[in-house]
Length: 477
Ligand code: ADP
Image 1: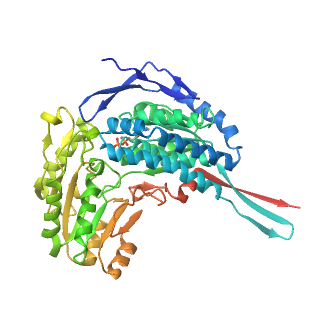
Image 2 (image 1 turned 60 degrees about the horizontal axis):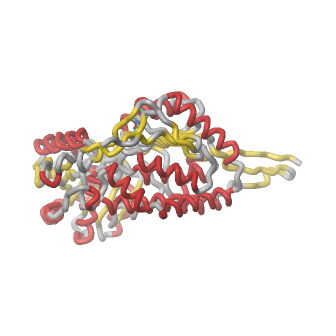
Image 3 (image 1 turned 90 degrees about the horizontal axis):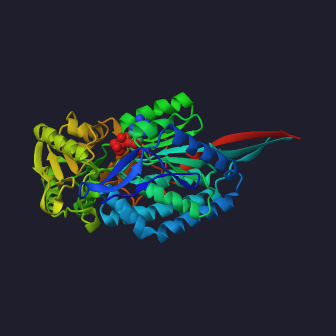
């Protein structure tokens, strides 16, 4: 079966490119679609289209911009089924998770439409005849480099505030999962935003991504992805002398004290590593557990993992496939390393044949007795692999929690308010949850890392700030 090519979307039009990229369905290992690999020529067209659109868009009244963003939200929900199915097929994300991501993407447009309407600068009197006004100015053309694990949601969280504050955008989706970004660009146009407000340049990181982040016409970069590529992006931003927001993953702990409510903790901890197959920047990939409840909690988790339904993403299992054969092999390699650094409690095997076909499936896995020096404790695995480390007392819990180069999210489980408050103060992390982990997408919650998890914040009202610069005007009369 031949697949039509999904071209780039530039200046409100589809733009054909000779070079193509295959998009694979991770549930089957089969070809799902074909898209293009944009190069410097298409990137230049896209940046020019965004710059032309931005000259008018920044002058549109805030209330009107907000109205148009709300239209985008309505259209996303109108096409909810189609978007969710595309997202599910291209990422291997279980269908109900793809549906939720689609809904959250709509919410970003609603949320930033409202937030920008009350996003004011300041005015004050500096001297008797001297008035000062600060205003928020858009950067201009913003570049958005998006990963494959949450293609819609991660795009929504930077695209909506960028557009709300008067920027126009060029989006480079991940080569593995470009289809929903292309569809979203059509909806943004249909919603009434100008041609060129959202341009999509699919392609490989080293070609399309590198050309975009080197283009002198961009004024800001939002990037979510690996630490390795994050460093490359930070260098590119430094060369252009422009700001960047980098969200670079984590090795986030759930820290469980002996007085915790384990009925509440166990299912949340399991979900924190199983959602999207553990291929989530904020996955709860480490379990630090107080020694006296170690056996109880690990036993409960083992039971939950044994009951996990695994299958093709469209069938909406609890656990779908990993994104690619490379990622699967990388995860299996970490399981092997972890089995020698500690003990394999359950899982750890590749699943293939029968209903798994040629898909990229790995069993949910628990590695126990892992010390902080271990590679599986320190390195982001990006798979359904939970590493368990027992601790003794609050001091050791803090020491272990802070013992990696990452610091994105932490979950603390205790019924003791003093322990909770001390952990909140001392755990180094962009977000800390107590008796919870994550918060239904967390549209309202500023999100981003400390240490190698990156810098800058997205989400929440705070997310608007990254997309503006302050202009101070002083008028003497
Ligand atoms: P992941 O580990 O999630 O695949 P990557 O950091 O490899 O994360 O990729 C995240 C995004 O960055 C993707 O859209 C990818 O194409 C893009 N990318 C990869 N390399 C580069 C690069 N050198 N310059 C710009 N973008 C890149």
